[in-house]
Length: 390
Image 1 (cartoon, one colour):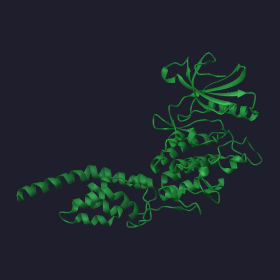
Image 2 (cartoon, rainbow, N blue to C red):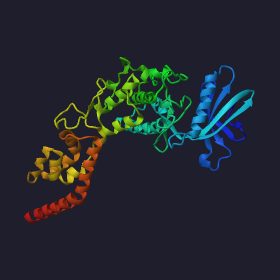
Image 3 (cartoon, rainbow, N blue to C red):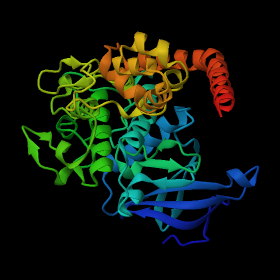
Image 4 (tube, rainbow, N blue to C red):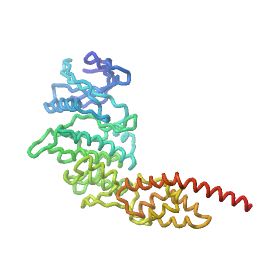
């Protein structure tokens, strides 16, 4: 029986238990041979051989060690050691880097729900990790993405942990693999032993929906096997469509790769899950209340504020014509600064969010270099005129 402060392999002093499901135990430990204090904390995963253990459990444990040893990514815990000990019970041990932080499951248990902006950040970081895994040869499938396996690190980055269900080759016709996964997060094909890269994408989508709604995916209502979540959250249509495509029941109707999913997320295109057609909701009309402006483009527009007379033409925001009204132009300049991004998005058709951002960035630079000096001269002139009158 393992106990705190016990030393394994004359090197790893186990400190506190992080998890225990009977045959598997996970401990936070101190590496007594570590080169520096920063690297002294490690995670030791132990598998007890004997009793209720199945050969598949040992096979998965050894596979996790073998694959982790080959992975080198800054957001995946680094493999450190593998050993076995005979202490009445035969234990197999896997040692890996400790990631200081808090799991997303812990945050959910505290009642935390993430915003759309935070969900997109999490999605982008996990997709970059999945791009690395899926594009290896052979590809590596995690097969157990869920809130407890995503760590929000102390550096405010997301880490993917627990490769206990990992698979190092995609399913081929006529080939099945060990069935693993967590109900609600794993898609149907995975429970049929036929996981593919799109299976990890489904699990990511189900995880994001849990983080946004606060409701586990297995507790959400379904229609035609699709998770019904949109009425529980206030999200932009584009992000709802993106999540719906990520969690399509049929793997062939999801994104084909993590790279494609990330590109779609960055583009800001809305995805209608029924017919899978792309819909860009820019240019919908400045007075259209039914179309949502992407959250990530909202904010102050320096180009519109500093160069309102020129900015309005290229962005087709005709409200800006009021800036030519004598003595009241400065009110319109402030309005354009505050609402310019929203009005520009609705007034013109844009290829993508990235194109919109680049366009407004150029105007901001022009405003600082040209508009600011002109505005200062106008204000100085106005103040001088006012003084002369008084």
